[in-house]
Every structure is written in structure tokens, then in C-alpha cells.
Amino acid sequence: MMKANLRTKYKALRSDLSIDTIETHSLDIANKLLDLDIWNKSYYHLFLSIIDHKEIQTEYLLHILHAKDKDIIISKSNFKTQELTNYLLTDNTIIIKNSWGIPEPIDGIEVNNSKIDVVFVPLLAFDKQGHRVGYGKGFYDNFLSACNPETIKIGLSFFEAETCIEGIIESDVPLDYCVTPKTIYKF
Image (cartoon, rainbow, N blue to C red):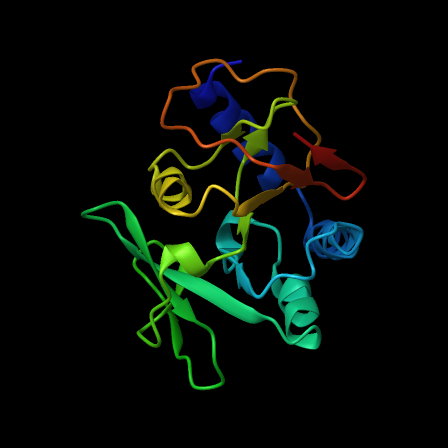
């Protein structure tokens, strides 16, 4: 299926999820992540959930990262350049929603992409080859392509893999893993 069709399909599927289902699935995903051999790293990039879009609630993963005393990196979006600026999440970080409803830090200690060991990637859909469909703006592809090749890219999804996404282009950065409430996919 083409990316645009998958965006429409999975936005509709997510909109049908109840708050209880989102919370349960989000907790299941966070618990599944504990089975991955990724916890010996230092810098973990985490997206903050857009509640209105019924995204995976990353607060459970945030608690795990805090409990493991990891450095957590969050981003601020620049819609003119389609780039993310990454900041260390600290007790003093002030987070506000931007005009798109994305929770972002106002400012803080900037962290270079080269330092990031693991990125938890938001998505709408993914396939069995590790390709993903996001919102279509290219922020994460731009960001992931600027990270080290060794950076581990982990998608988080409420839904299982599609067989194949049509329309993949060279600038689409594939995932290393995708975690759903039931399955860990390794690519």
C-alpha cells in the first residue's frame, strides 16, 4: 500500500482507540522494550506524545529511562528547515506545546546528533522490512540520517507490520526494530 493510503488508514485506526486501550498498549510496549538489549547505552532520544493524535504514551518509557538513570534527549521542531534540535531533558526543562500540538522544550542544553545512542521513533505504520510511515514532513528522516550509523532506531506502534510499504525513497531511513504491544520486530 502507498504511504498516503497508509497514513489515512492508520490515523483512522488510531482515532478509534479508546483512552484505556492507548494506556494499556503503551504500557505493554514499554514493558516489551525491556526485552531489548539496548540498556547499556547512555543517550536516549524520546518523542513526547501528541495526546490529541492518540500517539503512544511515552511517559511509561520515560519512567523506565529515569529509573535506569539514562540521559534523555527531547526535540524541538523547526518547521522552516524540517529539522529537530535536540535538548537534554533535565528537572529545569520547560515544555510547552507548539502550534501543531507537539510538546517541546523551550530551550536547554543542546545535544549533538552524534551523541545519541538510541532513538525511539514515532510512526503511523511500518512494514516487515523496517520501513515506516510518519506524518510526511520528513523530520525524523532528516534527523536519523544525521545520527551516527550505529544509532539504534526503534519504532513504536500500536499495530502490527504491513507486508510492504510502496513508494519508499532513498531518503527514508529504515528502523532497526519496531515494538508493538505483542511483538518485537528486528530488521
